[in-house]
Image (cartoon, rainbow, N blue to C red):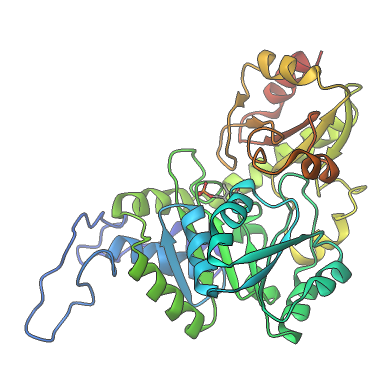
Length: 376
Ligand SMILES: *Cc1c(COP(=O)(O)O)cnc(C)c1O
């Protein structure tokens, strides 16, 4: 079945009464039919029917076999890193989500999980960074916030030749546009707080894997550390996912128009969007994904334009996060990437003239009008 069909029908008929919307099994525990017997559910940390529908759902959307639902994207990422084990080395995309960077550099380094940051669009840099204790390559594609495209198939090959896992944070493109497991990745992670939830109303994380052994081990970690999504949040996320396809289509359509419009604006010096044919990642992205998503970063002429822009937007909200139906703008320099030291930020291009837009489903005429005023 195709993704739109799977998504829209997630959980339909799961309940014995035939309800279309899967019930919220708001229970901590379950009756045992008899000694040594179980309905399949014993205690909601270990398994809950509402969460299970979601977990099976994300596995299906990502062409995996096992799905897991966590209370946030960061808890999903933490569990995956912890599962790699003590003394693990990681190779990471250099312009990675700031929270992932903070987790590694301020917390997991204390547990001897260390990372080397490289430009993962450059395969040679990845190969050069491999050490004896390298356990995984962790990438985002497109990257955050500069939207650089990494060659997933080629990186998977490098990883597997060296007995290393490839982990992909697929938050930006979602399974609607990109399926990393099909391109060779071993573990796919989502901050479902973004496009999958889609309405800026929940925090959640999802993981999908193909390999049963990795899946079982991750489940063991999840259950043991208690990193689980609640039944209510699972239900809300399921409801969001049902409209993933039509939201992504509209958001992407708006993003293409806005990126072109920004490119022609005199106050804008640079536009980062893999959907623009002159973007260096344009062709590679089309080879491995079905679209370019709806995240755009752009640089304005002077730093003084930034506070003016943020003050004068009326429709667009100045807020962290992304992926929802409302258009949001962030200033990565102090927001999402504020935990990265200044020199690194500047050398990456995450400077004090850069803004990142998450395009929503509004009418693009209104979005353009709002930006026109704010940039004037
Ligand atoms: C938001 C985000 C995360 C963290 O997810 P939370 O749900 O906020 O914990 C991780 N990776 C990417 C790419 C993100 O955008």
